[in-house]
Image 1 (cartoon, rainbow, N blue to C red):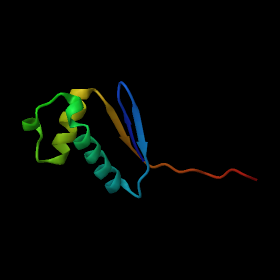
Image 2 (cartoon, rainbow, N blue to C red; image 1 turned 120 degrees about the horizontal axis):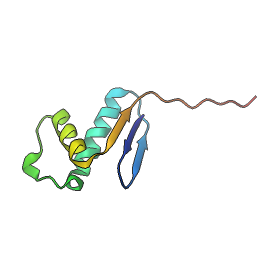
Image 3 (cartoon, rainbow, N blue to C red; image 1 turned 120 degrees about the vertical axis):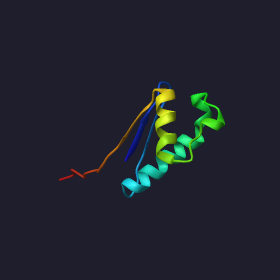
Image 4 (cartoon, rainbow, N blue to C red; image 1 turned 90 degrees about the vertical axis):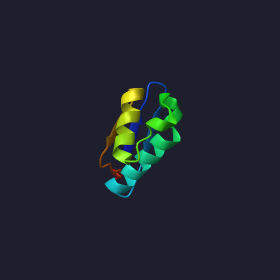
Length: 74
């Protein structure tokens, strides 16, 4: 599961594994790059650096973790 909390909105998505969640996180950052009001030249080619720069600039938070839905019907 990937959860992103921003000042104006939240986003949650479910993925097969941590690698898929990280890929989704990078795609989210790339899609919302202009929200951080950073110039395109600030985009680092390294995805981890890009994510760190974007989250620091926006003040957003993200969590990647395991999630499950249990059926508690008797």
